[in-house]
Length: 287
Image 1 (cartoon, rainbow, N blue to C red):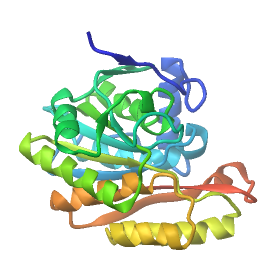
Image 2: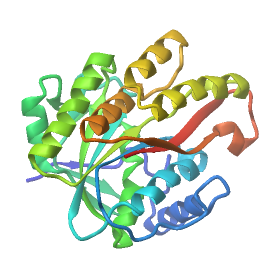
Image 3: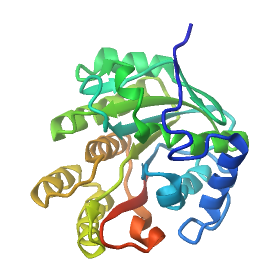
Image 4: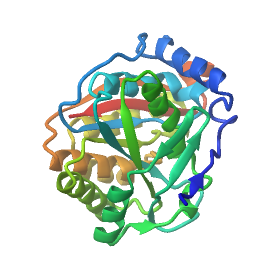
């Protein structure tokens, strides 16, 4: 019997009622900071990498929607797509790098894991453990699922996920995880999307946060994962998911990605009007 991972932050980061959740997701797409358009039907052509924020939808949802709008143009429902979601470990529970199999429950329906991909990953990549503990209360991966499930409900995509929670975010670990994601995607001949779930600078004044965020965004757009790691350390940038972003960049470059584009950037201050201590949010695409 498949294990079920139940929502930990439904009703907190996003609505727990299906109709209210769909309404909020649609509001994110149409928001002034969002793409101002609903998802469209597209065609899968090649691997895609995305940077997505993971705060409450009221704060980062419109920025997050940019990534899923671009994703909608690059996937289809003809075949299943494997979506690898890399998120930081905020809880301190579980092992250093944790992947989980089974089913993830959302208010919009269940999401299945790509069991074969999960097994290949934890068997071949020594740093990765099969461990559900790290995932039980972690929000960074969970908040991506309603956006993905919404695309499925619109018959825009069909997907399974590979959820990877990273407590260890050192450069060597992140690069190794990214390399094996790409290697296994090739070996299994998967349609692949790799999502790095991360917010940027945390709880600094807008002027400081935006300057620090510009540094890491530049590194991401240059697809320079080594420089990203060094800048996070040297400039003391409180980006919570730099390891997932490094892993995503490594995976995408190994799969042949050639360019990255910033889709949107804002801070919590742009939403609330309080610029004294903000969190930065960005969406980007790598392909």
